[in-house]
Length: 335
Image (cartoon, rainbow, N blue to C red; front, side, top):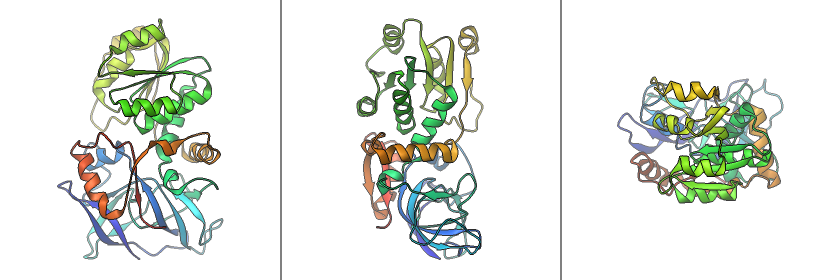
């Protein structure tokens, strides 16, 4: 099967290339991609080598929506024309035979995958816009972390960093009735946090964060979600916790060892939780259902919609650190 894909090479250069995907086997489906969602955190950790899931060239992207184009003989529950959301594509190669590492290969006009398992496909709930639906993983990541931390109504919750994952945490905590305090250095991110349910906003570029949190929660926060994925933010975020609070390592901090100050966490007798992935199908279904019902205004997070030809320039800009205006971005592959 011939397709087009966003390819990154070892020099971190981005191009749209023709690729070859295998025909679907008996236990697989082929999907024609409508939209793929961009993850500025995990994807660029892979692009920059902070994480490695295989050699270059790579095709990133781990969230997309599309239409089933073909169904293997052993697959039940799917038929051509079904709208689906999916987490990855199994394999691809360049026309000259060189293998492309799929990590997870969703930035491609087509995907071939097993629909079952933890990272397959499922039916897109009616009422979910295709572009918005393609960004389903980050709010599901946030929901998974909130579910693990289990904050209660009235709890003071600090969300330290409100990129897409942090915004998902904000929305999930607000829905639970928590008092949500959003911290970031980007006013646009903070304004989105307000629209998604944050009660208080702290601009860390202008305000003293510990003092601002102390005014709102004199004993410290009941739960702190560190959502930046930056190791240097761990100690400042831990310092916002009250005694016996819950601290959530919500970001992805990479493969290297991470130092943090032991005593502040130790003396507060913190409970620490480390969510991984997006909570799988239960959390994915929950956020997509909330989008369909209008309870989660995830459309507000999309700042950029690009065609495949424009995707390399967007990725290059993000990779160079010249994309402070980008929050949620999607690539439009087909209608």
